[in-house]
Image (cartoon, rainbow, N blue to C red; front, side, top):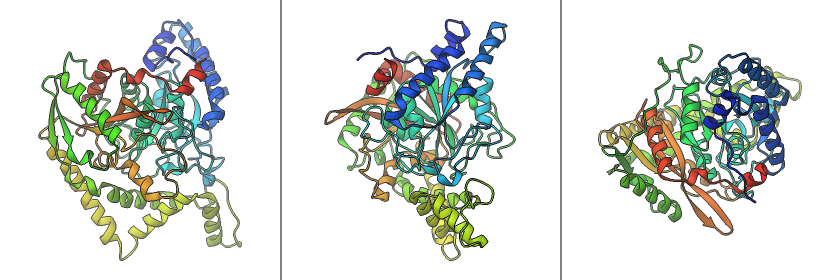
Length: 495
């Protein structure tokens, strides 16, 4: 069954502004596609149908009166369940926050609303963004539109699945250690983690505050760039927000002559899946033929990145999640009537196994007698990882390699082995710890039985070099057509 490729962000917004379609029609089509995909994907936790249609009608009224409706006019999108939209449930896919409706809207969401974009749904995720497969949600597992027996990646599983299925042109996820880039790779999407501080985290429910970044998915890098730039800019409500405006997009170039692309030996270990290696090397060859110079670089402390990440991230999670005690948010369990028992019962019933595991680990590494041995040492290694990148960027302009060590794996394949699951992020975690901009984009496919599965190329730039990374991604997509291919379920949804 064939279907026309869903409109991208730029194309749909241009049609709404030119009145070749209208915002109500765009919202209704996205809502209809959402319903067609819902049973197959389990990607959605809440639908704001009334709110979306009301916003669309207001956009059409403003457009009819000649008012500028913004660069994202009428474009429907989805939000991860750890993002605040006033009055719409944001439960982080956790029982402990069931029913929580934030009284305010996140800064990054408000900027999209001001630009004319229209949120229609809240997406499924690994509970509190802790996971790499979408299997840790309290509300069931999200499926991959390329193969419903496989993971779409995590933790931003629902957002990735909706875009890959052609339901919405873009969706937001949060990237802490690779939670947008890894599902982008496994779902044939562009997923972008900006420089830390580019996008305000005000209204993003925290997992690990020094790592969390709001990050968009779309099918094209150009769409991801527009959405990212719309959300960027200083926010006085977030003390980690960079005190500068949105970056300017770099102009298109005729060739990549003069660009040095660093290829780290550590990103191509012997354990890397052979098909992933082959597709990544083919992508690097495309860039080399376009004029780029490939330069071997080394990131020697990368082997310690996963261990460092799971000390730093769990320590911050232990602190951030202490607020969920049954007093202020979500359901409350009575226990034996004492305050401590109420805390314990609420958390025992409200948190899933993976969240409990990470809270316990984080509490341990912060505890007296272990802080210096674990947490302080992890912070030192984090600095060494950043210095590795700084030395590499003295020899190159961008670092490139695979995004995920494997293609999408089968649901249940790693769920009984937390360490194997954690290693899914081995190639994305270093850029997160260093706070660097990083893009994953489609670079080919591999066959696994009857399934045809996407592979992602990762591009990492120096801090604040967002425009450089995205410009290279745009150029690569001019030279290739992988991002234009649709998942099997997308054909059914669009039919």
